[in-house]
Length: 531
Image (cartoon, rainbow, N blue to C red; front, side):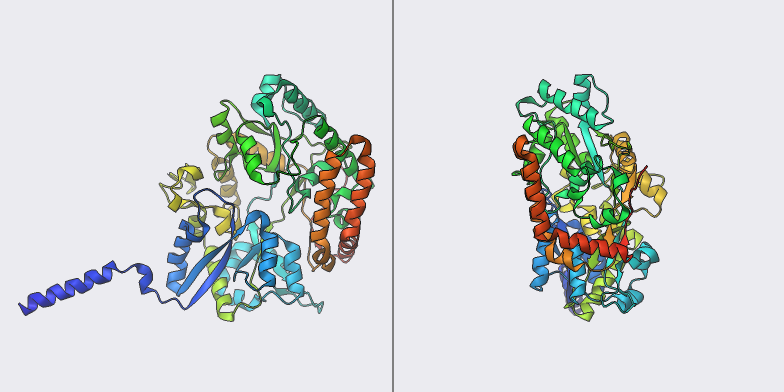
């Protein structure tokens, strides 16, 4: 009887232990707060998502670290992080595309130096990035000739950036070929408007001001009007953030002004800057042209193509390469530097937490972890693997259960793009990761990489940019809104007024500082020059 009782008690003890959740067995010694971009994807809760659970189980729990994802709006990340940083509420691991913010923080001794931590805990970081790319994060803010590792640049797998798209079904209805020049595009836009191909709300040219980076699209359009024989390399770098002062910019905006008054542009372009209204018209088939990322129409997180086709059978987006420079015919595209977003640790983070942060980034760079964070679960996020070990049958986000939804780039941010071990596999996946759209994606990549120049950055903090960029951007937004919508008879006067306002807001100082940084050799990027 005693033996039986002992057996029952032992069994009960075993069962009680089995009923405990795994996390209850972990004694967390610290919490690691990680910034993660939030794109407001329906059903995806950044603070309680599959990727967080995977990281917690495979990195956090074995190391006694509680991981928290801190969501930050992708489109407002610079402003939000600036506010958090000034209040010392920023996450332990910060990520940003705002180089001025980082340079300002470094200049104010606000960023932790990482050399020793990476040397001891970052071997996978070094292997994944390589010495050249990792060196992008080293700076010499005090000018003593010795650089220290203040930031870690994420690695861009694909450097192509913007793509332009038109409606193949509209071209077919009009009996037109794919536009190859601005003149071709204009004929298509006006013909589509005349034929009301998008119904009563036909909007041939989709455009809304991207308020945090108002020159995102405009630079691409401006470059088609620039006579590069009249621009020096020094000017090109000095006007990094102010392409509106390049020769030809005024002519480009005058064209948009005409298109606006002819009903070609979306009439509320300066008001409806939120993507929601644009997405609505996009998916309802009202738009005939737009410019965003090279793969934007077919992304699984927001598939414009499939959503539009549900509402307009036969509707199809195709890439075009029509912004040919009027002087030399090149279709210039700004491509990303191999250094992607910037990862850094605020100065107030404790040494122990900073160690945990580098360990986490190092863990993320391990191939098996990067694969899981980017691709999710076989049979749920994708169907299986092909003979080359690449995932096939990737599921659109809306077809994945909420508890398995993910966004690869926002969590696995050390790799800006899908990584499978080598360039050949990476390139193969770019096309095959868009089932049904492989041909259009491959064509878009080809177009986006044509006549490419590398985006500009500076290797030293630019104090003027830190001081004035926010006010300059505000005035650039005003310039775009006013010169596109003003009475054509007033265009030149409005242009003069608002370009002067940009200079008065601090652009003059920024341009001068960039010019000096170029003359001192503290820059990265390329000048397209002349053909």
